Length: 585
Image (cartoon, rainbow, N blue to C red):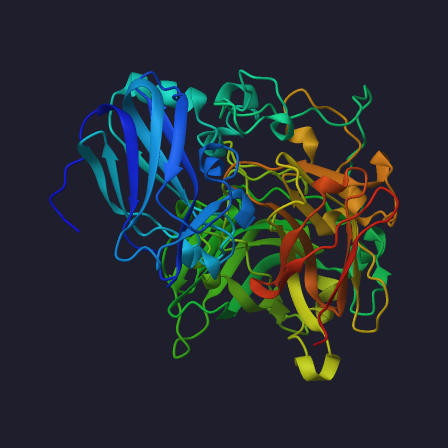
């Protein structure tokens, strides 16, 4: 590979050659997901033909020119070829355009069947345009981030002209990934609507049309909005029993507080620091108390603890968070909140440190709370923050960022001082034959055929005693929440709350969940508990109304640890596909 190669400005030509020099490690195959082209007008050029010198391939070669497979994991809808049988020749793809074009941008989406087979993706690539080499370099592996939540695309720019880039943005389905929320999910603006109104399933592969297809409308349009009001906060113990202490009883048992202190004993694994994002205090009837005139200090001497009371809690901005050095040989940091006058406080809301997925491990895991200098009976086990806040949509409490970006869900943890004994270190796995965790996450990677929507009928969680764990609205978050995030869609009954309403063997729209498949993101479901909760089995009921929209590939993680990855049986119009994920093994 040459290091002194210079990418030309708006190269012009008629025929493109993509030369696959090496893979990311697969000894036999090299492949690719999608190639996107944009000309100097910011538009996608028309193609005349595409061919390859490879003799053994998987998938239709034309697949790579359809700009709708970014999240695809089906090898038949991507393209790969045997390179080990070409006798020292490289795999080549030749794309002939209809007319001579000036290229402004190329985006490469690498092979993304799964983490293992992502090694089939092209690594070193050369692109020739007629007789000129316009790119020579390395393409990212599809799964380079630790979460593996979405495949990665590499963008090659041949211009810095702002007008051209703006025109590209107007036609770029992937540019919408950053701007979905900023522009109220105006999908039309970002080129998700095709010039052709054909359904992609009806397109003849012999036609030279690789235009983006219109996302089909779905469901009946209703005029009345479904109520999404939150229920009262319940507590679920490990037997599945729900308890809620009346607010009046809480208030009568809690003395007024002048000073709140919190000693931080342990983080989630970061080697040398510990921190929090924010605090709020709860009064009678769980109302949020005014803390504008409270004073926050820390034993570390750093004058930054006041950030904990700034109210900017749903954020990924480290400037709005509090972080201090912490090692086992140092005394535990202590936060002190002094109230201007005694207040009756029944609990505290805590947002853990959330600067990034990696830095979320600096969040507090174990802490001890003191009220007026008197310690509560037990240590407090805090939930780790998600560490992510990009382009997500949450209906949990509807607390949003001021800069119009959204966290994946409201990661607040409410600690009630009369209920702290339920926050304990989890029992060892052999004693329970089940897993324990705060956050159970389902990542939904692909469907059984639909390219625009993905859905489920319902989910059920069972305790280590094999009893059904009741789930409430505050336990659930989905990204995207439902098809109601799309422009022009209002009051569609297929909302995320239906996942936990118990009506799972059905095709009724009022009892199922459907959400759009967005560029650069897989759909996700979070089941969130305020206390560590033992789960022995998760039952997943697949989407039945339109079986092609049901989930095919998914993974299940518990507090960031992947515990299952597999395939959900497809439903039929008469029978619901059911997957039982055992967490006892």
